[in-house]
Image (cartoon, rainbow, N blue to C red; front, side):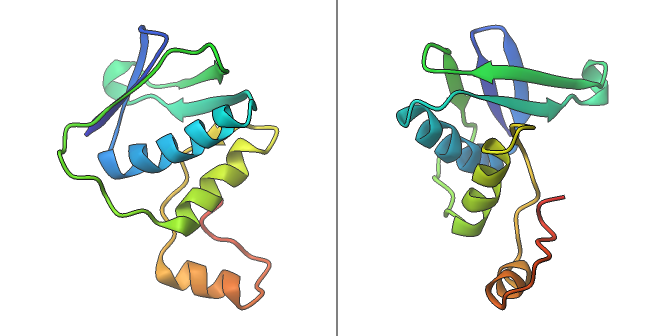
Length: 116
């Protein structure tokens, strides 16, 4: 279980694989000079609810991983996360697409089940 830390005080735990994919999307947007909001649901152990932060070039971000191995990258997941980051609602974690989801999208289906 990794940790995302925003400006030294706002923290949330995110599974290492998901955090790696979020890091790719976040750093790509910041390299292009594109600020955006990032939201997540809080665990009930910390009171529940939802947190949203505004991510911009001057944000202090830490991606802390507990595992030592870099996970493989799922290009479809990066694209799904980037889609949310570019939407008015901002970046939020969506489930990792399966091969079936990617196959359905490649066949021209307008339904993208992993962008719920």
